[in-house]
Length: 132
Length: 132
DNA sequence: CGGTATCCCGGTAGATACTG
DNA sequence: CAGTATCTACCGGGATACCG
Image 1: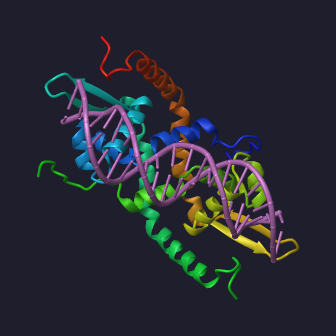
Image 2 (image 1 turned 90 degrees about the vertical axis):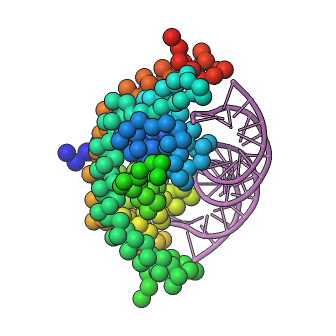
Image 3 (image 1 turned 180 degrees about the horizontal axis):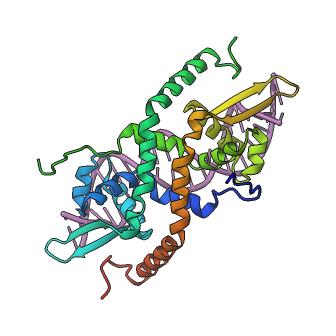
C-alpha cells in the first residue's frame, strides 16, 4: 500500500485537531497517570509537578470533552473530584506507547543530529550553504 | 511520601520536547508528503495549501535539525532545494501511522463525545455538577 | 479540596515586503 | 525559486488572588 492517492493527504483538519487535543503538552502525562489508576485533582498535580492548576484544569477539561477522561464529583465536604480514564481513553494507550517507544529508541540519534546541525549553523551564519 | 512514585512517569522533558518538535502542527503533513517522494519547497507549499512560507520554512528547519529531513541545495539558476526524508525520518512512519489509524478509528466516537459534552455545558453553566 | 477570575508576558503564526 | 525580514495579532501558559 503505497498510498497512491495524490489528492488528499491523510492529515486533514479534523485529524490534526484531534491530535492537538489529545497529544498536547500535558495530556500524555495525565493519561499516563490515569491509566494506572483514577486520581484526584491534587493527586495529579503532585504527580506532575511542572503543571499549573490552570493548565491541569484546561487539560482535564479538554480530555473530558473528547471522551477520553471521565470526571466524577462526590458531594462530600469538601467536594472530592475523581478523574478516570474511559474505555475510549484506554484505546489511546497503544498508539502512545508506540510513539514513546520510538522516542526512546531514537532520542540519542536525534540529539546527535541536533548537535551536528547546531555546529553547522555556527560555521555558516551568513547564508545556509554547505561547507567545503 | 504521600504519593509513592515508584517508577517515574515515562513522559519526561526530553521525550516531551522531542514529540513537540516532530509532531507539531505541520510536521505530520510535511513528513507524510516527503515519505512519498522528495519535494521542492514550493511543491510542499502547494501540497499543503494552508501553510505559510514562514511556517513551512520553520517546520522544515526543525525537522532538518532533528535529523528526520534532509535539505539538498543544487546550485542551478535559480537554486533548487530538495527536501527528502532521512532513514531516521522513515522510522517515524510507523508510530505516526498507528496514531493516524487510531484517530481514524475513533474520530466519530470522539466527535460524539464532544457534542454530548458541549450540550451538558449549555445546561449547567453555573456550576459543573452532574445531571440526574 | 478543587477549582474560577485576572493580569501579563513570550512565543507562534499570519500578512506583507524584499532578496540572491 | 526559495527563502529572509518585519511587524503585528493572538493565544497558551505562568503567577496570583479569590471562592464554594
